[in-house]
Image (cartoon, rainbow, N blue to C red; front, top):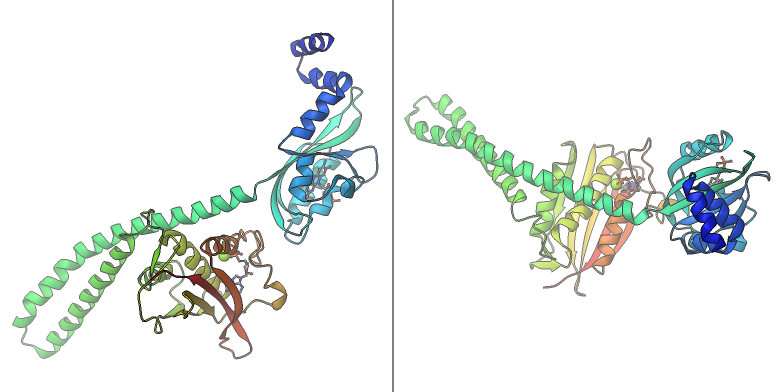
Length: 384
Ligand SMILES: Cc1cc2nc3c(=O)[nH]c(=O)nc-3n(C[C@H](O)[C@H](O)[C@H](O)COP(=O)(O)O)c2cc1C
Ligand SMILES: Nc1ncnc2c1ncn2[C@@H]1O[C@H](COP(=O)(O)OP(=O)(O)OP(=O)(O)O)[C@@H](O)[C@H]1O
Ligand SMILES: [Mg+2]
């Protein structure tokens, strides 16, 4: 009764008194709130040098993989690592020095070394006399959310591109139709041999353009309908490569070989998802080559009901020391926030979910003859 009276009294004020009452009169209640919170909560002692952690809740232990005993007494920067942005850390440092609250989303690392995206809020806590006593940190692991957003974003862009190329193909067809038909109508009447040759070239070009726009139309049709959980090979892959050509500069040469594939196969990945995989890999290769280079895509079926799709480029390649890092979320060597570093982790996830594997190796010889570019090989089970 005494307790609820105190709470009622406080409620009439600013509500914050409730917390003081809970902390003062019922530390057990406060403790159970903190211990049961799905949010990750930490408290740093502001009275000691370098803000050592004085409390972390069980959710902190679960998210970071560190036990309470591992971390109490240490500054929370042990969660930071290679991909943590130093700008974000500097923002935290400034806010703490100014005793201001701060919100930052930054890359942190669990005890296992696995990176995660931490949406972190830190705020100062003052006592009644205005003395700074602690900092409260609330951490939220938003890795999954960001990966899903990246996947949705790519899918939306592909869908938009599909729709736009469909509309464009229609318009082109409408415009090309009279060109080709009027040329073929009047060509037989042309007696001047030179003019006739020129007009035949014009007719040939118009027909080629019509064919191109027809394949553009094919691209936007029958795709992105969801539902179908498999991709037909080689047709599906060829359609996706055509789409990818629109997404990299024309200065990239893309060669495709499906030579050794004698039959039509299906892989257990929806075509929209598979498009995300292939386009991510082609765009990465193009970026690595600084948009001027060669990409070679090979398709080979093995006796063991698996298919290998390799995407090789003649860019700078990946140093051996980095090979194991590139599939980790947030790993990027593209500077100035150009890359989210999520592309390959989305690729890996999609491939692994289909029972497939992904490998990195040495790709095409570099044009200036020193080393090799990169090759990414997908090894996926197929259904005949
Ligand atoms: C209560 C509290 C919680 C913190 N939690 C995190 C965290 O989860 N991840 C992180 O990278 N930094 C966290 N920090 C920030 C670091 O402890 C440190 O303040 C930051 O790296 C800036 O200082 P520095 O440049 O001296 O390292 C937290 C700080 C405080 C005070
Ligand atoms: N073909 C390649 N050649 C050389 N390095 C590559 C190649 N593909 C990927 N990488 C390296 O792997 C890193 C991670 O690639 P990932 O696709 O995950 O992220 P990103 O391309 O940097 O950003 P985004 O999220 O926009 O895709 C790249 O930053 C690059 O350093
Ligand atoms: Mg990428």
